[in-house]
Length: 197
Image 1 (tube, rainbow, N blue to C red):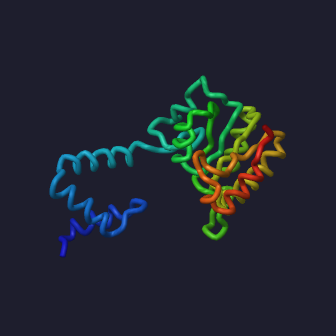
Image 2 (cartoon, rainbow, N blue to C red):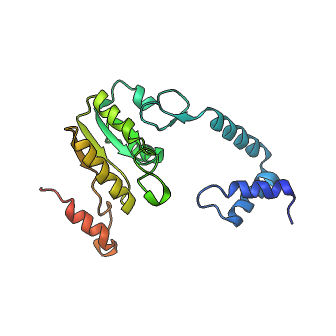
């Protein structure tokens, strides 16, 4: 039905999360039918990003510089380190605006089934970073999944041997959430993470 180039474009768009065959087809046809300028801009931006964006030498988030803006910022508290799974987690925490320390991006979580162990997460690099920067507090902000919890526990045990204060972000009821609509696991975590008023 479609020519080989159009088919290739549709298949290429399917690599994006949440984009199925129909969405990819709709996007491809839109770009080719109605938005040549947008298609050119998208192609140029994607090529430039692929060529120039890499990992920060310190925290491993995405950046086109050797060291990201957060790691370069002398105002950031180098004694506080927040460990996250992905660069998107850094963006989310920065948007919240309540953390003034630095980050370490694991680029995933422990998953022996997928062949992802401590080496793949750069945990040796994390230990070096903690000792070299004389980090006093590490906040583990991995996802609230089985793998995220296992990763958190593993890292906590490693860092406790280094005499570092280790904490885990709280999980629980979201702001504006009504208890009757919150699942049981979330409620259990909220009760466990309660604090004295």
